[in-house]
Structures are given as C-alpha cells and as structure tokens.
Length: 428
Image (cartoon, rainbow, N blue to C red; front, top):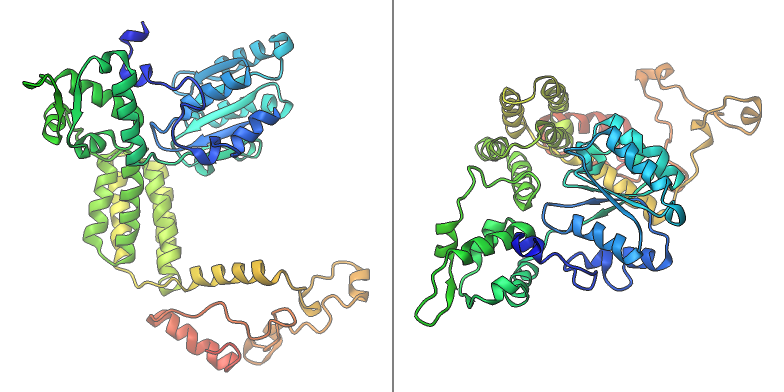
C-alpha cells in the first residue's frame, strides 16, 4: 500500500535526522531537541503555513520520544472524540501521562471543543500538539494558549524545496526508475506555493506525464510543468506564502494612499477565500498604526467595519471591507502614536522603570496618605484654563519627548495646542 501512496507520503521522513527545515526548533541544541532529550516535552501549538512539516514533526516527536500517539483532525472530530482519546490515555498503564495527542487544524475547533482539552493538558494526562495555519492569538482560546508553548514553523526556502526534489528522485523507488533531468525549476516551485507536500505530488504528476527523449531522459522544464498542472482559479492560498505577500502589499498600499492597489489586493484575498475577520483586523491595525490622530475617525470606521463583518460574512462583507479600505487609503496619514509607544518601550528596556511621582500616586489608605502619596497633586480642572502645568514624568525624565505630532492639519493643530501650554519643555 505504501508503494501506491502519493510521492509526498512515500517520502515522509522517518526520523528527525531526515527532517528538513525548522532547524531553529529541531536542530542540534534547539528547543525541541533539548526538551525531548530532557524528557520535559511541553504541550505546544505548531503554527506555520501548509506543507512545512507540522504533522510530520508531531509524529517524529512521538516516535523518537517513545510515546503513545493519538491523532485527530479538527475538521472531522468533536468533543466526543477528544474524550475518547483522553480516556484511552488514562488507560495506557505504564505510559499513562506520556501520551501525545495531535490535533490537526486545531483552529477549527470551537471554543467548547478547545475547552474540553484544558483539564487534561493542565493535569498532564496528555501532551497536546496542535497544528494550525492561523494565528493562534486569534484562533486558539487564551486558556489553552497559556498552557502551551507556541512554536512558529518557517516557510521552506527554494533551496530546501529543491533538496527535497533531488532526494525524491534518488531515494524513491518509482522516481529512481525514471531518468529525470530538471533544467528549469521556477514553474515547479511556483506550482508548489512553498508547500513541500504539493511540491512532491506535483513533481510526481509531471514526471509521470513526461515521455523520455532520445537519450531516455524525462526533461522537466517550466513549459512541461505548466502544461500538466492546472492552475487554480486564484493563486492566493490563505495559508501559504501568497497569504503573507498579498496582505503585506494590501497594508502597504493603504499606507501609500493608493486605493486602486489596495482594492486590487483586497480582491485577491476575497477571491482566495480569506477569512473576512482577518482582513478586518488588518484594517483596524492600519487605522491606528498608519493613520492615527491624523484622522481618528479612521479607527472608529475600522472598528465598525469589523463588527459589521462579524454579523454579515461573505459575500456581502466584501463591500464593507472595500468601503473601509478606500477610506483608509484616501485618509491623511500619521505614524506618530505608533512611534511614540515604540520609543517609550525602548526607553523602559534601556533605562528601566522610574518611580511614579508621589503627587500622581493613588492614596486609597491612610498609611499611603501618611507616606505622601497624592500630596501636592494639582487637579487640572480647577486650574486656570484647565491646565496646571504639573510635572507628570518621573524624576530624571523631565522634558523627555516620545510623541512628535505628524505633519498633517489635525496633528499640527494639536502641536500648536501643546506649544501654548508646555512652551519649549518638550522641544515642540
């Protein structure tokens, strides 16, 4: 039966030494290698695009750790299936507490399904390995994330992918019988979309369709690949490399105030079946990071867009997303707030945290009042013009500037307002 399996399955690594890529996780001395050697393997979420080895890695971890292995697919399994596995793990005798439960596409589990895992993970009944192509911060409940380590699997480079191809041509019995000569590789890599599984299965499809030349060689060219591989309606794969490239271009087009390009990349995502909430989240981030106080209404509109998309879904959400995209792209831009918080965080990392001035401290108890908490606080609403000029930064930080208003009408008006109150204190 193994000989009848697709090439990708036939070439699945049988040990971590055969596993390619993700050396930051499984290389010598890397985090998962160390955990396996120490016998302290944590529950984990493996996050990465399709075809980078999440399922294979989970199986190899189980095999090389000599642990019982249970696998479920979130697409086909429910709470009943999870409970059955947990009961089985409890009955594993000497292996109790060492079983690995692998859940593919864990982001497809509902909240209640994910909740059903919490007790077993907390108690150590099983070690959970969840695989996802979606950001766990959004798709895995916080309680489960807090009990797991999240490891990011990187996209496979062209070099690694072509290494897999060469290995398959040499080591697979069926492929080794064919004299394959690769003279062009661009179309093969493009058809794979960075997915090793798709790459190997595409290779097998193309090679099986090639007629040997006069020298008995099956010559693989870009033309040979494109002639035999039917391209999908949309090249956008919401879990593949195009996902990240298109989203990046979408945000940068909004930042560049180009509504035409922004709507084009939005259409790419719509045609590719992207989650509308993912797009709406990106619009929310752009509204604050790239527009900010140059037009505060942008954040309000983006937030309303997210709420509307949650209620409506496809296909009508495309209209709402397009409206918001055009609005953000044609809005004044400012990253002043984004830069301000970044610089303030960097200050803290560099200089440490300074004590809050006594006048600004909360004094809910008598002892705190006796220690001077809140003493000398100037209540701005009682001051002339509603401005006291009181020092709010910690001692030694006086006059430190983090926020520099952007060069746009709204923030320039804010700049004049600040100058009128603080004078040259902050270098405005």
